[in-house]
Amino acid sequence: MKSLPMRRFFSVVYFVILHIFAVVGIVLVGGFFAIRFHLTDVQGTVDPRSDEYGPTASGSVSEKNTDGQTAGLPDSFAELDQKLSDLSLARKVRAENLCGITVVGRYAPVNARNILEVMTSSGSDVLVAKMLLAAKIRLEGAGHEDLFHECLSDSVQVSDEETLRKSFGTAEGQNLFPWMNDEEWAAIRSAIVKDKSAIEKASSASGVEPRLVVACAIVEQVRLFHSQRELFKKVFEPLKILGNANKISLGVMGIKEATAIETEAHLADASSPYYLGPAFEHLLDYPAGSDVAGERYTRLTGDGDHYYSYLYGSLYLKQMLSQWEKAGHNINYRPEIATTLFNVGFPQSKPSANPKVGGSGIKIGDAEYSFGSLGYEFYYSGELFDTFPFVTGKK
Image (cartoon, rainbow, N blue to C red; front, top):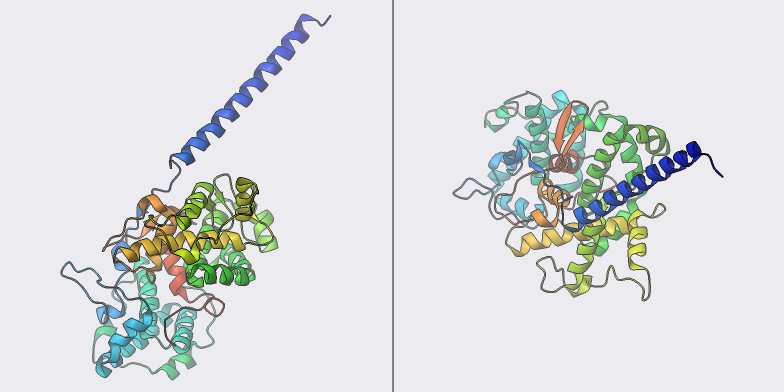
């Protein structure tokens, strides 16, 4: 017969274990209902510089409505470039761009080099103007006001493209965007290039520009790497791999299971505002008799091949882009809005003529960023443009 102290010991152990399981059960059930009723959805905030992201080319080619907002955004950069058919206007915008590159080169020769290379490869003055706007917002945010004012003067002397190429064509050094100078970015950059074929395959299936898919994926990775520094140091950085999953958001694109289920449902629901058409209906079908929940989890978290993670992410994004386009607001070339929507999700995807940049706050060092602002900075930084080029719509 066991002694009384021993009985008490086992009673205490039993009591502790019972309560641990009870707490775990409550947490799991609470997590289930939180996801089920969208309590974990990202609410996000509006970026304090949100209203600065829309104009292009110093307003030269950006049409404004009576409220001062950008109106009638086109389907491609090519359509905006077509507006420059007037030779005098085209020359003015090109001169402004060359002047802007000169200004950027004073502070960040590497960025001037990137913009020059994009200018040569794309031939799009509007795209270059957008890249310069991203640089301007960053410089002004760092306290350098009115640097580009001289570029609006007709009397300013502008260096030609060849002269600028001699000055900045082989430039090295720090990037204008501070978060692209750290070890986290170096690891992400290396790893995302390895996924080039999977990204292009998913983008081809969804019809979303690869660079836009990459912008969403990169910001998810930046957030993960900076929030899990120890794991980054031990695993991600040495192996140069992307972070895969946590308890709620899954895979390299951070897709929640509930979001994946909604994305699948919208593909088959012709009455949904997110419906993409018959050609997309069966892209995420499961084999007959398969364990759908288990297969979905494997798709989103697969370590060897990230194709399905990118496919779910790009289809999810495509559904919201399509919703906005049907409502008369084309945001295919507004990466700051597209990435914000990717972050905040279906519940907050409400088409508007004056959309706001924002989403989750992300702390990098001492600086605070919004999800959408980081997506914008990557997209127009020129980084990785040789691997994931801009789609301008030009033949």
